Image (cartoon, rainbow, N blue to C red; front, side):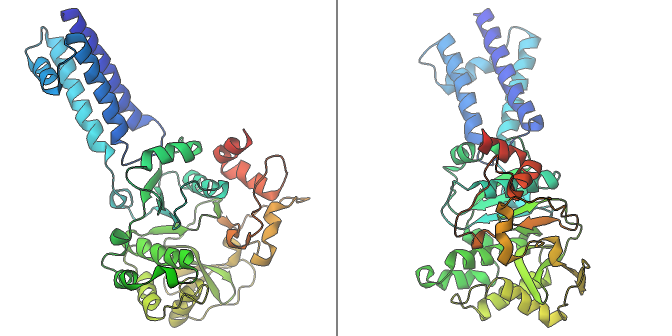
Length: 378
């Protein structure tokens, strides 16, 4: 019996240490519901002990056996180590969005449809951001994601990103996002079925509330990150006299995002595309400063906020979006850009990156989201 007990203790120690070091050193996607997978391993260990000692023993019986006086100091140390590591493992498994984003430097992506199988461009956007901002959390909020299907869905559809440890996935919950903001009462009253462009309108609302609440950078899921954005409070001009809301960054509780949420509700009209998006940002900016006509690659300032030159994110303008899916005789360097917008809203033809096509998109995937590229090419 003593020999069997030592075997079991050794098995449990190896299992617990494996999980402990796996959590702290292995590069993996952090899931706050990963507790369930760890609990299964713990249960398997318990079942093994049941089979050795008595097939009908339950957990209380095993606890009693484990808590009896061990035959040696060494076994006592092993059992205490297993208990400590198991508790540590379970405690570190639960992480909330607020905890992940508490530093105010997160990179936030959104999916406001029920889609849980994202296209390659979305994966590339997330991966490229995670590689550029290695020491910052990259968070993807998904409307179609629930606490119960989270772990299975992520393993199935985001396996290419498993080597990047700073990526997090969370369900998108309006009560949590809109609480204590001007958008809460608006959202409760709105009839979603009667709204034009509801997917975009709701996304406009969510991104404002999330950045106001947590701070950080918001990006649309069709941006490929090239290098880190050097400013904390910024907007991106899509063209002269016109601001984008596809990418922006502010500190938590910033006055600009507060005023945008207030205007969002006061001047709400879903019939006009962009009324709550780029048009909203442009309206608020004009209340603080004159919007410039950009010449060259110089950025502008509006108070303490940077208004980035269109070259920083939109070097290929909207009417020329197909250039991303064409072969270039000489590839552009994009030295003046921090990220590139691939204009997915314009892509009604559903053009995609094709391995071996030698297009600009393929070059960008290879350089900035190689794991996604490899998954597609394999």
